[in-house]
Image 1 (cartoon, helix red, strand yellow):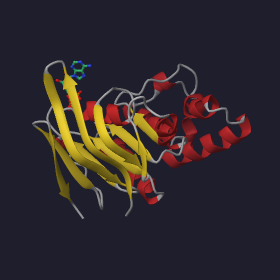
Image 2 (image 1 turned 180 degrees about the vertical axis):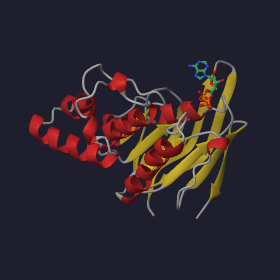
Image 3 (image 1 turned 90 degrees about the horizontal axis):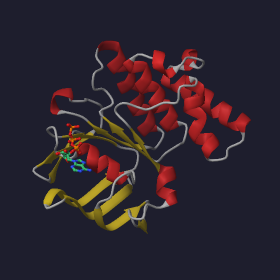
Image 4 (image 1 turned 120 degrees about the horizontal axis):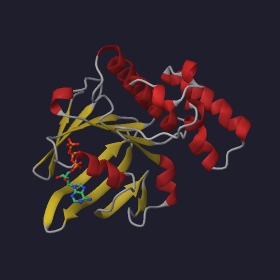
Length: 220
Ligand SMILES: Nc1ncnc2c1ncn2[C@@H]1O[C@H](COP(=O)(O)OP(=O)(O)OP(=O)(O)O)[C@@H](O)[C@H]1O
């Protein structure tokens, strides 16, 4: 498996406090990771730094074998890395409009975007909701729409912030079933979650943020 993202050192400071300082953090292409840690360990912050939504101090960063900086965050990484918020914010239009918005923002012609939106909504099992208002969606539906909205952009790395929090039963299973199809298509996925939400997927690798350091554990 090739390395998609490699960071020599990544430090996040909050005033005088060092939230975390990671060394030799790397992600393989086409692999799923679970990032656990107690409340406040820094899981969301780490994902947000990787997505360019927050600043960190990073050195020796490479993406797909090419050296990059995380600050200022390069346009190419913004295309390749997508962050999915735990409580996705959606426009009060239709589900389909929300899924397609990112493509239109990238100046994709409408017909081509519509075809990709249909494909992504089929993939996420939400095609029947295309005309619905996002405010009417259940928690599980909303997460699957958010995943369709991310997948339609064909990212190389998806950063999912607590994708199954507050979901149980079928809704949780439906969201989890989508993850292996992302990695099978070559994308890497990092899911922040709590230990109690342990996510069991084949080939998943576990990271735990504890006391500002990452502990890595393979589950192969
Ligand atoms: N911009 C900020 N300014 C000050 N403190 C911050 C900022 N962002 C995050 N923090 C603090 O950093 C710590 C880590 O927050 P973060 O949300 O990354 O943790 P988490 O592991 O995702 O927690 P949870 O499991 O509760 O979601 C918390 O103590 C939080 O209050």
